[in-house]
Each structure stands twice: as structure tokens, then as C-alpha cells.
Image (cartoon, rainbow, N blue to C red):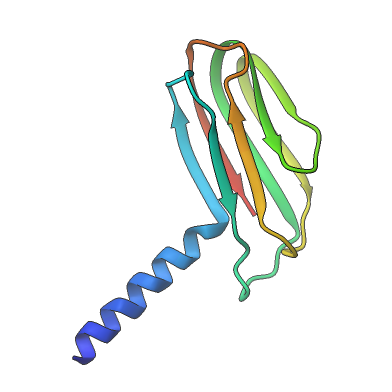
Length: 110
């Protein structure tokens, strides 16, 4: 019984630690992707970071609810930072916009 409870606690801890970070690859340009980052109550935050690396054949947009869109095209290697203090969830949207081909690696991090 104690082993089962311990395993549940460890799994919950691992899952809850990843709510403030996402890393993924984009090769399918037919649909948007929506991610919600949730701040961990036990952490102190000072910035929100978007890292994008790769290429696309036309303009893509990375949208963050409440902020200006990040428009990127061609060979991409960029880091976007803004102040963030852990007060709200962050909703990020990858929008292929005009792009139809490419390969991107995107990270969102609180």
C-alpha cells in the first residue's frame, strides 16, 4: 500500500512539474496548436521565454493571448522574452498562417 501511494505521489510530482514548460516539433502545417502553461505555486518566475529554431516556407505566427503576435518566416533562430511573475496561466497558439512546409522546434518556458 505504501509503495502504491509513493508511486502516485511521484507520478503527480513529475506531471505537475511540466505544466510550466512545453517543447515540441512542428512538421504538420495544416492545423493550429494551443498550449496552456500553468505556473507552479512553489516556484518564483521572472520571465516567459519562447524559443523557435528551424525553417518555414512562409510566415508563421506564434500568438500569446493579450500580446502582439510573433511573426516569423524562413530560417528561424530566435528567442523572445518578456517579464512574467507567475500571476496567470499563459496561453500560446502556434498558427501556421501562410506556411505549408517546414520543420520547427518550439519551446515555451515560464
